[in-house]
Image (cartoon, rainbow, N blue to C red; front, side, top):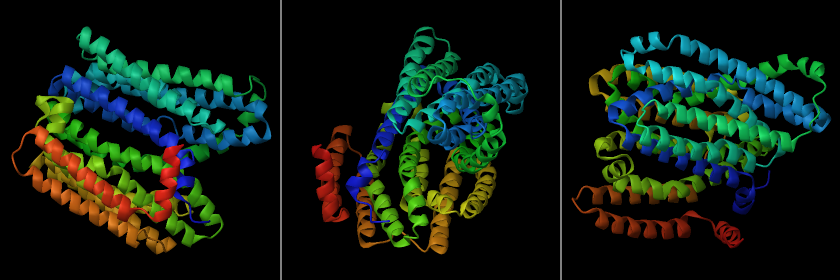
Length: 492
């Protein structure tokens, strides 16, 4: 594989996917900030507990069919496109049935779960979340089906933009105007329904209208489920890792503390989604390089993309370091002052995750998924032990330290596995320059933050810091050909 250029990488589908994810995350963050301001920390904590359980079930309720519909849908598109729509309908039906099953069990056991968590007022939240689960599954599968067209705009609109806007509007009406706190969950359900409906419209427009061939498709259901289940287990473990702290916090701590922890975690989760966008772009590149046995090219690509990601996130990192308390208060309200310490601890773990880059994709797409599963299982075990030990002792900050430590362990362990199995690492002179510049910039703004000063002065200092760091990253962090390629992309 030839060394991928900055322009080639930027012009691939990753750009649209990245912009779509950023838009979706911003809309979601706005919805959570709106909820935090319309609710008390206790009420927002109840919502957060339900939302985190919902996200956990949402990892497994689709049964991995959102990946299966793409994998097998591409085959139908190439071999017999007239069967594609029938296939998509069948997969969606299977997924919705799974969502109804998961949701029905949750609905039926809502009261018992609330009692087990010692939060009896959670019952109505749990039942509304349970109703939303089948809609979420339908959205995941139908949105994934639009990607068979290789045009990411449909997924961006149906999965990120439209649901985000519907959610914010419904929250304003149901919680802001009607003053009905459980309406926060109903707003979420409406957003999923709107996204799923739009995805179905796109599917109808994109693919053949024929509904024949059901018998032929049913013969391949076993292979579909086998593939989908394997993806569900692999991706579910990785995603569950980032939810474990919030699940333990929801069990051990009171709802108002849960609400504050949730706001801190929301800000640092932005880095997870940025890294996920890079993974989408890297997956086919890794697969191509391994097929060609071009490990030197793979190492260059790994190094370059990791370095580019660090450059992209540097302004956000400096902003969070310079004014963490002001950001929490500005975004979520005065009730959430104090959560900035949790956010900074979680940020440390995310930085270690960013420093090692897409180690999971490198191992999985190179045919070594077992190596990554070993790393994740070990790190998750350490995470569970630390959560159980540290939360009763140190509360929410204990959960944050447990998460940061186990995430750092998973990242560094994954990096070591990549080096041992593939013989590659991201450590070249340009990467080390970027890391050094970020370290110096982080130390500078952290030092500034120790002095008491008004927000306008901190803003001015941040602007100067970003300008200096931006020039240094441009001058020393990017290679000459990357600078030229980036200028070419920006002029288009």
